[in-house]
Length: 473
Image (cartoon, rainbow, N blue to C red; front, side, top):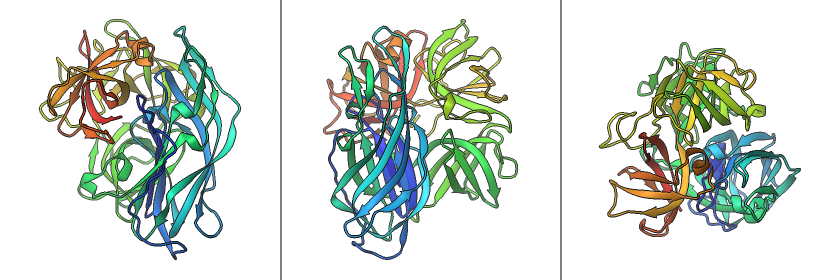
């Protein structure tokens, strides 16, 4: 899986992935233009092709709500010979909602051999951010540029499936004025960091080595025990296999889910194919879902939610809606929690008052949610059937930590961050679970560390609690 992920210290990371047989390459938000590789097998000028997955993501600054770009074509240049095009088309991608996770981009075949560099074209960025006055601003600077990133040492595609993570550092990708407002986009080779690993055993997979968590899209076709999923606003199509162990929930069945919106929890098999562990029904034919960060809650209990859209699927939802402000009528809506693969041991089911409630009385600005509607998206208003709490990332400083998981600590975020601006709070209590993924931490988690935490954020009525899915530098 080739994944493009952007991870920037204090900030979140998102990922785009391109599945090429046997190669897993991930791109996200990272910290600089370094490159390390490992695993792979095989040598330069090899024969045959290998399935590979390409992922891309982004770790935007704390005040950035939406960072959308067009990516493609993508080429790999071997140590000898001509460049190989692994993605010939372009994809329109929103990156902030993937902070700390990833999402596949395409399924391809890549010739076996050694590769010295990757070249990808990035164009037509759209940035939605909160300015120094607390206003939501949209910026669409002119930008269209191919970027070449070197592998050091050369990256090898053999018969097995390696995983390459290409991290995009947002600090090196956006320009800011003295007051922290975004003024432009400047993506170059220094924006990226490349790492590599191999596809892990299915029970041990994480975002970088094969796991597919909370993948939402529209089912375009079903054939036997497999189905094709068109993802969100990108239209990327992925084929998932199922078997007797696949769990189908909330009305989803192979016999009835064609043209419906579903969410998949899946893994990558050693041959690069995808397997669905769980399929959850989201909306029927003609319905849609829109996701984003809540900026305002009207009513107590809530009757309306205002949010900035960062993703969505279904009828009427496309990339032109990304970055727009929506108002959802939630008067008659139900509430649920999108658990994903979060460890809830010792907590029980979710929601779980008093520490982890989620309903019309506790939904709060600063939370990331998904609005499900029976109706097609038209205009900027929605009639909500269901409100689902979604994972999000917070970046800040650790304090009050004693011991290791299971334990809690306080995360203090920047006072001008989107979360603090919308929620009115600069702190959240983090629940560090036994199953929380500690990724790339340079040392044992310590008070004073600057970290990014991805998880589910709850409001108790007086404070915020987050169950951590992953903690990164």
